[in-house]
Length: 221
Image (tube, rainbow, N blue to C red):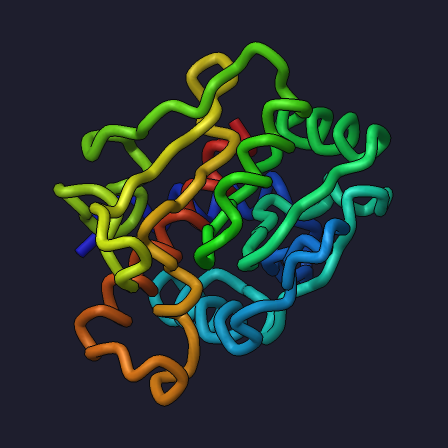
């Protein structure tokens, strides 16, 4: 269970980042290049429902869909990107993503198997000279609400490797979280879609809650 201090902190952060009577949501990133950015269609609605249940935060029933060219991009504290195929960011989009992240935004990239090569190529264009670094299990994102002492949970087999969390940081703030060999989004889907054991779905949903909580608290600091 989270520490009792967490919920008052969330309430204070919400008051700072959201207008009165507004709701928070997750923005799914629509991108070019041919990849299925729309994969796992039931995942984010289920995650939002779980965020509301666990935290009491006023979140929407459904995610938003956004592109990097949309001027509303900075309004979303948590942008989610997934898919199996190719990703391509135009020059204008590279600049918009860079500005969003450096300005306090948070991007969660969830490899749904097949995204890795093109994502790494494109993020290197967004941040030349920076490398994705592995996030240790003692990082605050793994205890933002639920506790994950061993780090990122494993959801799907993929290549059979261990789950890995990579990130990009700006002055100590984690601004990009990349879940690899895990596939959290598959664990967020409706139970019958992948027939994951209940304990696997539970771990995936709890990790999703952590990511959302981290995004709205650290991004507002």
